[in-house]
Image 1 (tube, rainbow, N blue to C red):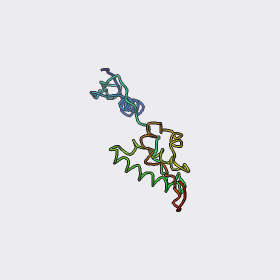
Image 2 (image 1 turned 180 degrees about the vertical axis):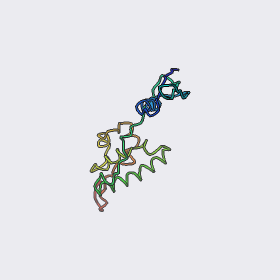
Image 3 (image 1 turned 45 degrees about the vertical axis):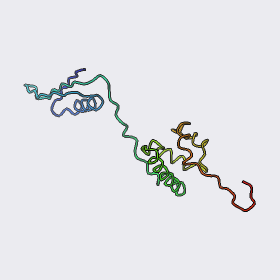
Length: 152
């Protein structure tokens, strides 16, 4: 356990911001506070007890993507179809949908002319294990010629 002291004068936004950043990035155990007043003015004094291990802040720059805006209409329709398949796969496998494929991975799959294992492996985030586990749900089935007398 570590201790860090902060003194925030009334109206001092810089010290307040520094303390807030510290609190967001550390595992806080306890915060003690006291208002101190003297001839020089008033200030809050904070005693923060925290664990040494820092906490990572999720990036706020990762905005939600509207794939209807990003993809052309036929690709978006394929993307929507793949999302439906992903939902069924997730239910069947007892997984969260993003574990099967993320929206970003599905968008890249939708851009492929034909979905194949080789094509899947070319997409960032899809490795051999993921491709082997889920590919059979998503791979485009080759059309067979059902003409009488045709050899398959």
